[in-house]
Figure 1 (spheres, rainbow, N blue to C red):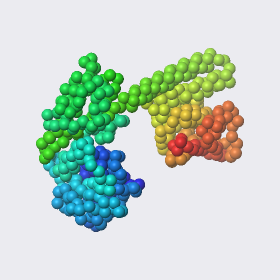
Figure 2 (cartoon, helix red, strand yellow; figure 1 turned 90 degrees about the horizontal axis):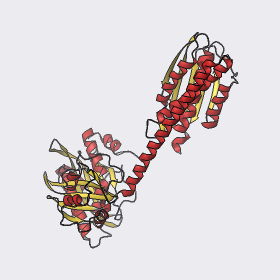
Figure 3 (spheres, one colour; figure 1 turned 90 degrees about the vertical axis):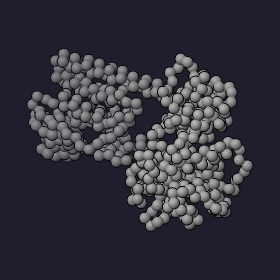
Length: 492
């Protein structure tokens, strides 16, 4: 399905600032749908004078009118005059009589979308429609009346370019509060005029045992917060509704997330909506994940240190060994241990168990060039393409296998001469192809070494990675090793 940006840019009428404004409004579409208990649709004008839906939000506490997604569809004839009127006049247009949609009576409101630029409103960039299902109409509760009033205030702000506010955080933390989680309405002085049951319950769990309505929300939070706890500097701004911001408050082991949405009337602040949600369990989970990540990074760091210690012991042993065969074996073992240590060192620096393999391979190439080049061999290595990000279970065997392949190309393919080893990586969604070519002596076609290095390469590529490896070459023209690894982890 096309994204909002794709749909808007396809019309060619709006600039990047307009698209960003529509994105921010669409991100609050669920809030508007829940407050108004109605479907919310965003429309932009097309080149032929019609309108196309670019975003749609369904209410979570009421029946939706649209069981199928209408994003990408053109405006229906019964709404076109109303949408066109709002777009051209810049005024909110309500339906004069119930509109029937698939045998369901509805009420439609068309709201012009205006972007604020430098404190002044720009021309209308789109239209927001609210589709209310009248088939399930019932006597509204006080909460629903308040929710509807809040929605109408926000619709008015949309039509005057005062909502959304681009200074608000764009990427809320996990567990951002919704209208159904808890809503408090405060006036311009910060006094609560309404508190939903869920909002009151959240504050009760933090130690406030009275009614919120009629109380200053700033004073309430001051009373319940422990005197010894450091307070987020944004908290006073949020609880007074003076800025569109988010923060968490914690008391008695309970954490509540707050989001403030200032309400304005043509630039004059008239109050605010404070959304709240008990996120105690979510924050505990986040803290556990942070602790787990730190522990895993420390483990990788210690493994890396231990591997480097082993490599150092092998290096010392190799220097003291008089047998050339034993020295070569120890040097190769040291190189393999160092290659694995590189992966663990990279994992120790990040928060995930995935690594940028291009960075790993760059370090591996330096390792190979340092260890494998003999005094009478001048090898240059060059790499093209990108490996991309790989999980650790792929990175370790692939790094070790490529270390063996490149080392063989230098030690055997370029033995006693000057030449180049080229490594090319080509990646698709489903496969990673790596080609290692040297300009050395070459192997007769079909002849492959039977040494320990070749056995290790086959075991790693075919056994651990489920891939394939082939050797191609001819005497005097170098050798090419082709490796293919399926990236099945992407779909797992």
